[in-house]
Image 1 (tube, rainbow, N blue to C red):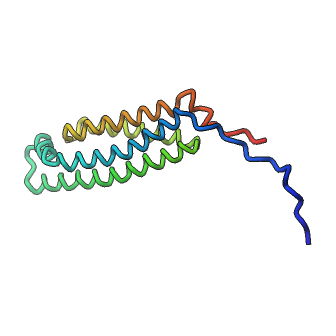
Image 2: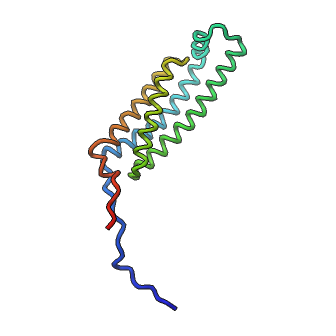
Image 3: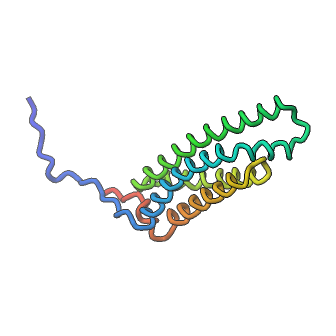
Length: 163
């Protein structure tokens, strides 16, 4: 039978830099973004009457059935989008909070997609309330990205050199 040698001199895992305040604040903004998604869904439900008017303004020849279908489609998109949005905000908050380099990059990609979505929503039938909360969510994302890519955050996302 073989005995293992003691591993007292084994190389230790390199230590990651402490989480700087910029990352901590970015993570908080991401959790706030998840909460804002819930508020956006509530606003969308509360302003659904205005949505009907907005749809009719963009499509004045819609029948009652077409209008109903457009409203149901919009509600479905809001529910699915809200659930996906909440999940992504929380996932990115946790991954960035752990300093995972890919999470910072993926957060920037998601922010780019969010920017395109906001621009597209400017031409879609939306109520003022949902547009305002959409801009607020976008601003939370912008602030988080700025903090994640600040000079102070860089070392936290750098991979420690192996010894």
